[in-house]
Length: 286
Image 1 (cartoon, rainbow, N blue to C red):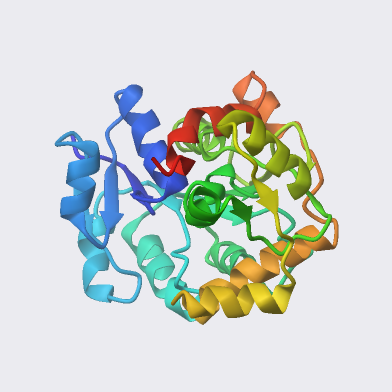
Image 2 (spheres, rainbow, N blue to C red; image 1 turned 90 degrees about the vertical axis):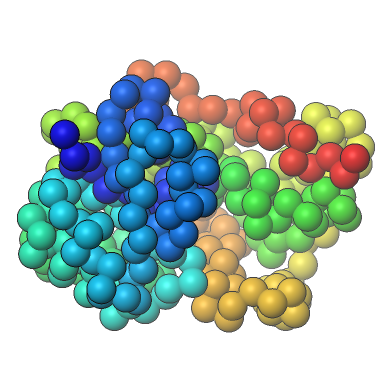
């Protein structure tokens, strides 16, 4: 039987974990990616991989054929709704019955971020939806900020003294799998956080203890952060979205803690210390 679940963003932090958790439950899925060979290498032959590009409508038909449930991740490089909407319209025409969208914590207050426009578009198209309004991914520190920590022992993040209720991408993925495979989750917006709110001085302390070397929080200003990230070659739209997210932290909007993960999964969220222990090899320069 052909898969009825389509995963976008399957090579990213959350999408990869969604696919892996579906595999562990022996649930087939299709992954829509720009490089199918990379996906086949990651997931093996049990996952059907098709070429998909939000900016190329010619890739939509094969991706959505026979699909009833879609896990939607916004590509970091795409920040305008007119870059995403054509694919959503095609999904609707193809008969997709539910979208589980990886959204953003506090999106209902921060209407300028791309996630807010995507939520509105999904609702305007009258999709049954589940919005996973996730807090800041712990895994951003093992990907986007990895080299600052690994090479410079520095958390180069413009978050001021604000606290963040970090969440592990593996917990987000577990909620996504639940929403994709079990009834009762449509027309729901779940704010997903970990069980603690930490400022980056506390984050640096945990890194220092686990990695057994001093890790500092340099606390750059917003303009310095934007200039530095652009000088590293990151796209302006991507940098501005990051800056917007860290601004919410500086304003104290990222500290809220919810119980949704525990209620949905029946267990406590993965702690920040556990995340650092699990991923510690990523930040070891040797």
